[in-house]
Length: 455
Image (cartoon, rainbow, N blue to C red; front, side, top):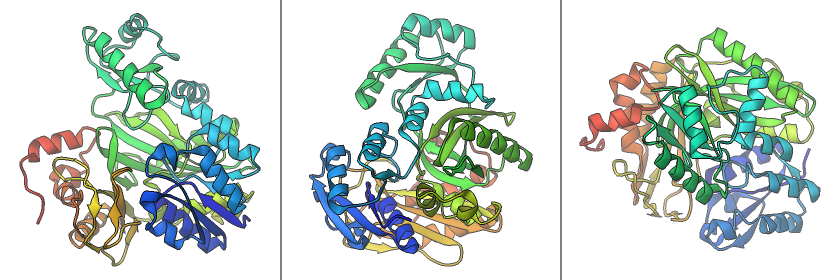
């Protein structure tokens, strides 16, 4: 096992990794920007090193700075968390060359899955269902039109190096294709330094389903089932749950077996998430793979009782799957996660500032992952996520009731949060009936746009 791990991240995920390390008896090193000097991950790590000013490019994304901190602290490994450098193959490669274990897949696998058209090709070859689309990068508007005619409108173009909805456009007609194609190229180039696009058939009102996997370094891959992530705004997830009401035990088993065989064949290691779209006939189509721990990993932890972060660390240290899981994966009950963001609940504008009151809920089946606290400051430089509220119930109805109660008892003052929005979503008849898809929020806001936040 490792003696000391540096956490190349901030906020709640950095604190989450520190918790896992403490339970494994591993010392931790936090890195922080000047804006995060008073953050909880700095307080609870065994050591902390300031690596620069608030700007991401000069602190958390500064690879030489992160590596220098790791070498100064003499760590064995680096956990990248999610976002930031977690899917940066160059960073993983530098770690490897510096004899520091990167807690994640190998650089080659990160590159393969990070280039979406290559990931699609690899999955298609292995028999994973994918949406009809281009065989690779589409270099020009003329070829985009040709492909769209073959696939049939509507289509969607996506950045090959993309994520978070950037470099993505839905195109419903040949007339609007040129302008939208160029707009997606420009946005992708600005966001990722790579303007390459590929094309897929666009599924109207799909569900967003993702499968969590763990893979050891000895060829064993295990699926931990699916999460339903359809409640999202502008491709940013707001609420997740597990299991999905639309995934049958037979479908869960079949897709799990296909994924385990595929990932074992390509040599995948550590934690990973494979994302799918589901159409109205319950067909699943691969869209991308995230080669890291997900924001919503607690949903899976709640229904399986598997600590995914501890599993990541143990796998990176060489443990075999039977040492990590100690038995078959068993699903119990239903879990829901609400992402609590520092945003206005109706305008969706960021809300940085000092938290004057912070009272998180508790009780049976309630978990909260957060680095926020009373008198703590939410800086304007980073992601707006301040807490993840997660509940488990014996079934979906109990989970909804428990989450509604927990949201009502969650008090945050001094800044705006999305708690009132989540309370309204949980009360919505369509949500309660499971009538959800990726367009749910647009319909919900149109229906409730003038509704006042819950008191």
